[in-house]
Image 1 (cartoon, rainbow, N blue to C red):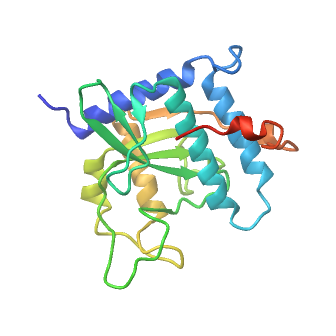
Image 2 (image 1 turned 120 degrees about the vertical axis):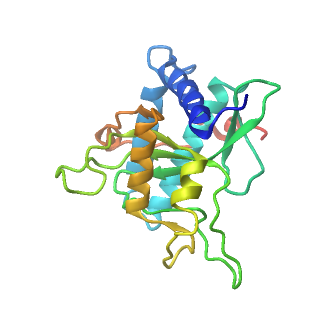
Length: 229
C-alpha cells in the first residue's frame, strides 16, 4: 500500500531530525544542527549589507542544507533533475520511489515572500502548479507581537505535503517585479502551520548573533575544496 503525502513527509522529517542530531563529521563535539546554524549565521551576516543579499544568502544556506543531507544520508537524500521545481529528493529504500522536495529559505530578515520560481515567465507561459513537497527552512527573526505574521512559529524546517500545496496554493499565486509565481506571506504562514499540524516540523534554534563579526573565506582551502558533482 502506497503512503499518503503526509505519511511520506513524516518519514522524511524523521530522517532529517536524525541528521541534525548526529555528530558532525568535521567536529564530533558538535551536532550537524549546531554546525548548520553557525555556518548559516556567518553567511547571513557576511553579506547582510550587500545588494541582493537575501536571494544570495538563501542560495548559500540551501547549499549548506543539501550538503549536510547528502553527506549524512547519501542512501536517502540525492540530487534530482525532475520535476522542475524540485531541488533534491528523498528515497526511503534503494528500490523505492523518490519523493521530490522543493526547498525554500526564509532568512533572518525575510518577509515571507516565496516563489515557485524566481523569474518572470515569458509571455504565454505561467508556471503555477507544484510537483514536489515544499520544504521551508525558517530562520526569520521571531515576531514579538502575537498578532504579527508568523507569530508563534519557531525557527526550523517545515515540510509541506504536495497535496496541500496543490489544493491551497496552486492557481492562486501572486506576482511582483521578480516573479509571476509568488507565494505570498499569508500562504507561506498557512502552509507552515499545516506542516506543524501534520507533525512535519523539526525545530532548529537559529542564533544570528553567533555570526556577527565573522566571515567565511574560501581561499585558504582553494582548489582542495572543489569536488565533482
